[in-house]
Image (cartoon, rainbow, N blue to C red; front, side, top):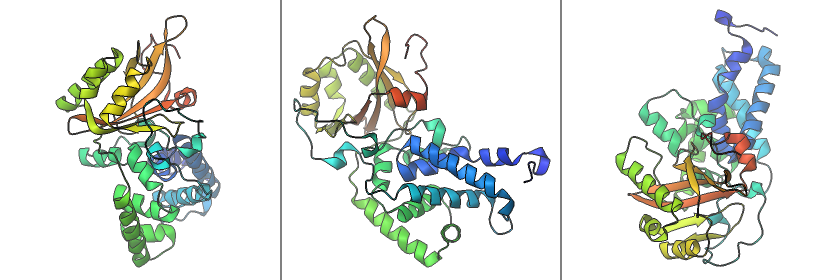
Amino acid sequence: MVETSTAGVTVADRLESFRVELTGYCYRMLGSGFEAEDAVQETLIRAWRAIDRHDERRSSLRTWLYRIATNVCIDMLRGPQRRALAMDLSGASRAGEELGPPLPERAFVQPVPDALVLPAQGGPEEQAVRRESIRLAFVAALQRLPARQRAVLILRDVLCWRADEIADLLGSTVTAVNSVLQRARATLKTARATPSEPLRPDDPAQRELLARYCDAFERHDVAALVTLLHEDATMSMPPFAWWLRGREEFRRALLATNVCAGAQLIPVSANGSPAYWQTRPGPDGEHVVFALVILDVAGGLVTGSTTYLGPDRLLRLFGPPAVSSVPV
């Protein structure tokens, strides 16, 4: 095997340079940051072992890697169960109802750190599309598609590949790719999704909304919090299938528990959305991480809240909160 390519760049370096964009692709395919990392690692191992057989006159290194990654993901998706959001698993619950038994992690779309899946390069419009395409609702909608439809739609509508490039990657034809794409788009149109905008740090109105929400949450000011919610806002708490819809259900649920009392919300970059580590005082009074909260916002209101409980595994993926006074 040739260890070094042009300009002294090693083969390993060339392969590694694609890790973030490949992880983003695999995350959209699989709905789990953990599985996406595994898929990319397997992709790079296969590529390393076969690099001597790759002919750049027939396909670029990038196309070749995406072909391997697509095959790895399709293999991983052969099981019968697709990942989903709680809203896709059951009808809405009522405040005060039992949460029910926790479901396995594989039942839910899992959150992912932005830095793991969003390449730094690209203009503002391209970055906005990338952030939109890793929102929980969009990734959950992708899971409704058969694996090949999922790959075609991501490559065409998210990554902006040409139909002939996708046909070459899949060993198909342009006509077949366009047909698959049409079916995939039709399916996505029927997917129920909470209205949401990506995180916009430079938007004063969004910043103010989030600041008011965090302040009301940390003070456990239910009346103030409810005024910031859309009338059809949803609340879910994986790993439970339990979820609520509507301001009144939010209000009743929050009044019935003191889970917010003494809590802090610490910003974290996740799924291109407003997201926070929720901490609360531990037995010794110091704050410990309790959950990862991802918000949906639209039209100046909070339209949804997904709270991932039991965050130990997520902490290994995201790293600890960026606040030295909060031990984890």
